[in-house]
Amino acid sequence: MDCEIELCEDGTECQPIHTIQDLLEFERNPVSWRNLVLPITPRSRSRYLGERYQEIDFDAGVTDFVDDGSRPQVLLCHDFKGNYLSDRFVNGTTGQEWVDYRFYNWAAVDIFCYFSHNFVTIPTLQWLNCAHKNGVKVIGTFIVEGGNVEKLKDILQSDEFMQKVADALITVAKICQFQGWLLNIECPLDDDKIPRLKDFVAYLTRKSHERIPGSMIIWYDAITEKGLLSWQNELNSLNQGFFAACDGIFLNYTWTRQHLERSENFIRNYYPRRKLDVFVGIDVFGRGQTAKLDTHSTLAAVIEFKFSTAIFAPGWTYESLEESMRRDQLNPVQCNDRFLKLNDRFWNLLWKYLYVRGPTELPFYTSFCLGSGKIRNRLGKTLDESWFNLSRQGFQPSIPYAAPRNLGIDPIYWTHSFETALDGGSCLRMEDIHPNCRLFACDFACGSDLLVGYAFRRSNELSADVRLVLKAYNTRYHDSVKIVCGGEDCHLSERRNEMKALLLDSEDWPRLLELKAQLKLPLVAAINGWEIRYYYLSFEAIVQPVSIVDIGVELVKDDPKDHVLLGAISLQAGFPASRSRIRKRSIVTFGA
Image (cartoon, rainbow, N blue to C red; front, side, top):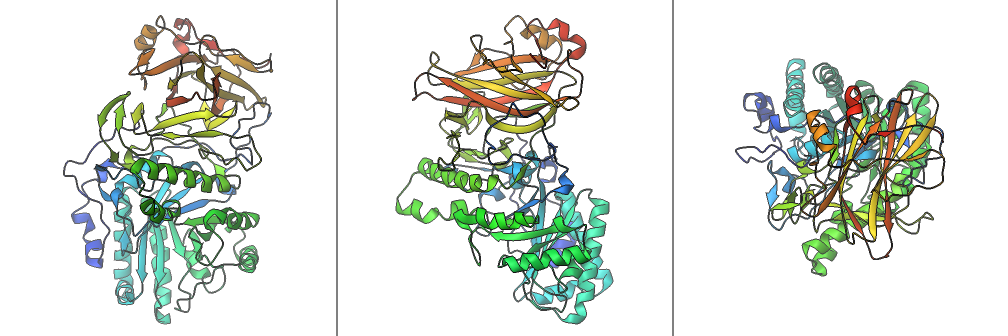
């Protein structure tokens, strides 16, 4: 299950590195949690969903995927109250502190940077696993700032020692299984040391690529090639040498439109193939620019120039509420609710500008757990009291949860419920959603058929139900079909290209077990108050290639007060060689 993780026996904590000597000796005494880091989950190719990102368009003829190397990237730089807080505990925490900042809008993020003002910031295991599980690269931070210039001079004392330090940084990343570094040099330096600093950046970048495939070294715009601490807010002749030596530059936040125009001209003239390697900084706290709940307007300016974006301190959506939470004497549940509402509002305002990537690897399972809860459940049975462990976060949907009702679109209301869960600490609660509400923009190949399952709980069994809807897309003929997975009494619309999947029953369950299906949900009709449905989708009548490119939900209810909880979704490859043994298999066809 996506909430089940291996624990570290010594219950250690994740810590930064403070000295050069400790950095050089890291390999001799590596962290005990290094083997608990999860690999990066593969994700689908990118898609731009536009303003109606919440709704699956079953009438669209073409599903456009975008090459990841041809569109702007998003770097999320997580600076949260100095970091190494609740997330530093390898095995998580239990008790009242289950409400804290959590990030879950991973679909639009390409790189996650764990940031602190310590010399060498190693991402914590919780954030590593949380990001990797959702398909996102993670980088740490190497920082020299303020009065620590002597430390930088020490590193640059010779080519040999400089390379030794760079090799140690690569070793740390390799042992801890993250994908590179943000280099933040925020102190002036003698200009005669600058050539060696450039060599350090180039050497670190080159050797990282050799030892860690897919790694990235990003330079922060602070020190210039003259050794001055002078933030340029643009790419120009004063910082291009560092940019040329690494994979990208993170521009400072106090830029104007003129800075972007000059950067665009500079890129066009000197680095025409590297425009997407320029990450324009946006400080969500609004230090020096328009941000907070107006961050979307600043992002729009960046997108207009087709640069990549570095979003700094997204934890503002939690930090900005802490004073009011204390003043209003909110309990943990109320604090959690206030945070989720602001966080969802913030990301909804940004979403129409961003590209998304979703799940693509089978088997796929998610319980939508955010990585914390006032309870921890396993198959609907409570195991523990309140807890916090981001390593237990499940794969998150491709859109933000609660769309504001003032965006000029159909109102949608679905959010996390922490009152109960199938697995972990939360599930999705649905009250008022669009008939074709998108959960995932995905890319699951159907060449081996699909076994689809989901678990749900309804407030009223007689008047409420939830259906899973899948969009199967044929890339050869640019045609699609809507597959509706519901109950026995599920009725379809009169639209073309819509079919009802057959609900598997107890007669087919033994056959699935005989075929050694690796089931993520138990083969039962219900467990601990949660209903479970399974469907076998056979693609025997379709010319391949066919993929499931969207997964959504439809809510059916008679009473406006009714709601449904969605506890989990499961997809796995089927058994095409033995599909005839499945009595109620659903044969997918296109056209009607």
